[in-house]
Length: 282
Image (cartoon, rainbow, N blue to C red):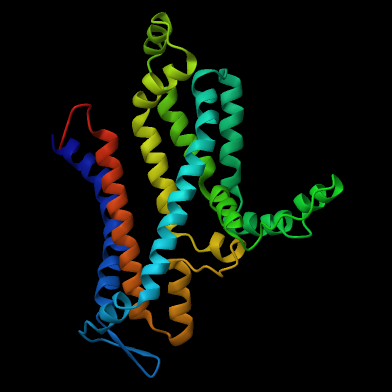
């Protein structure tokens, strides 16, 4: 029994220590820093609510917060819809060998830095880039994509679309095929079977994939900055600008805390919805 307890302690203690050292401690320090002050561009340990008052009283903060939230929500909806047919095919129709190749190809983008992939998209979607060159060759004028909302969405999709596909696929592949066959026997068409059987059965994977998409988009700096142009700043850009302009780490920490609270709320709501059984009200 002692050996078993020692074995479980060996397995569980390192991850707990990792979370405490690299997540909980920095989070506590971030909260403490929100009450510090800056004097002559230097941090001063303090206890003041000035940073919270300044940030929460600024009208531009709410504009940027709403923009960031809507950008993340739009990216979540778009990537979830685009990913679903791919996940559906891989989970229900693709053969074992094709699945292996497809999963390998979905994992491959993560071998390359996200920043490198984003810079590559600048070449592709710029005014004189590959896409606009092809459009010009067929008589279509230039389409503005770089430094626009479209560019930001492309960056978000580059970031986490493969991950959303994999999460959806894992859930769809685990669906009991007898349920689908029973729906067909009851004369359900393909579309009705998808919404009546597949979507409810894969609710956990679909919801978790959407939650990951929202969180990654909500906190991303690269896509709105490099592909969106930074003209419509998000909260991550606001943090960078706050630190660069006056080395105001405490106010930047307040913005970061607002982001963390939002993302934790989204995760909690998503997991509650994903694991809630039909008919439950709580």
